[in-house]
Length: 410
Length: 156
Image 1 (cartoon, rainbow over the protein chains, first blue to last red):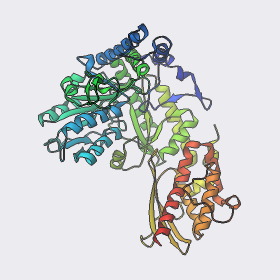
Image 2 (cartoon, chains in turn brown, purple):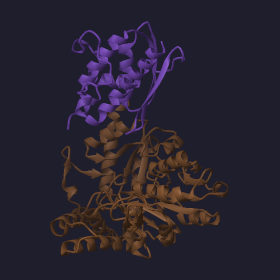
Image 3 (cartoon, rainbow over the protein chains, first blue to last red):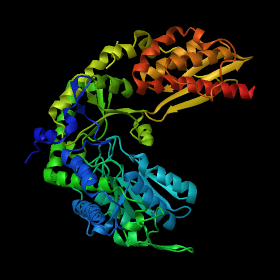
Image 4 (cartoon, chains in turn cyan, orange):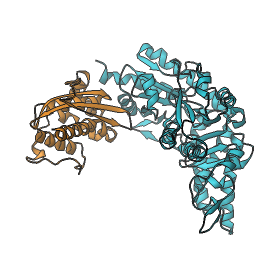
């Protein structure tokens, strides 16, 4: 059954607001999604009814807060097909989850000259942690190039994976929308003796996620792009890896025992969750998972494919050679992220003109400067869609885009 | 919302479409400095040749939005042939027009009052203040020029 976007929009209170006297046309969900009423209510409800610190109190409130946190972990585990709740480590966001892997598994297992393979379409969050490890421990960073159609160029994959210890790849590009062949890459990585990490930040909000099907060893994603609150992200990893990895941050929660001489760590996953965790945020993420499950992730994806197809057709028909939309041309091969260039007008100026019509798009390098260099531009405008967007939003974008001509086309 | 016409004044768009002093200078004798706006990826490259406290020549390069490019163009026209002291007055007057508090790291004007400085074409950028996100686009070239001139003076 197709998604009823009118009903979905009614679930998101922010959709009622106006911007500059126009209705809100929000096309920046790749940056962050809006939050439906059940998520906002869950966070409020937590503070109004359960608020207390977790895992240590013996009183009723603390028991309930702990149960709420662990219930959220269960929901997330179910949502991504994890075999056990303990495979879910809560982090601040996907960036922290990737850094966690680099700083624990990476530091313990990688040394000078050890290759880590990434791609030209990674977000800075999956580039800079490896640059830092290169500076500290001398690992070698290798790059899988992209083709002009926005797909990865895998012709040299075997050579790039030769001797590699880790392959770390975004499941969906936050700039091009490209859906990468994760299973194929994971199999190739394992054949080469490397582990596989997936940055699923742009995938899990939009497509049914099954970590076992992905064939991954590590999967990172963030809550706020999938209807959840900010400040909560997830690292999933195979249990044997989590067991063997040294702890990340040191402090409360992550210890079993502390003496003047040293410490021993708590069990997985708490070993990686030092300090009071983002409890309300985790509860909100649990509600977000429930919400998306209620919509049906198959339906979410179907909606996105249909809307992406409509957007590609509409913009190309209307503007022809005046618009360049980067990334795959087939909606089935991509997410609902459209990076485009219009008549050579700088993306900042495009976004400024669109804002006047209440149309929110992002302009800039989208935290992927190496990819911008590959594309031969310094920045793009990016429109990205989600469950609350419909064809009228695409039409509003198409209408407002032409208004830039008044200022920039003589 | 303030009118876009306040932001995209005709004189700004003219400098954007027909930039003055766009290009490169040989280094040395010129000094080259790069400025980045990490938020949007705009980059400005300034070449400046300073002799006896006078900005003898200036060119700019890089890529960015209409505001950052027009600001570079207008700035280069305004300061070319001026003394470094006059540049400092311009810089302060411009920053104050952009509603930016004086930067303690910037050299203060050694004489004259920046309030008396006539910014000329640069006045057209006044509308940027109504669009706070764009202020950095307008000031990037000034930061970069200040940096280049400091380097030039340190070299001499």
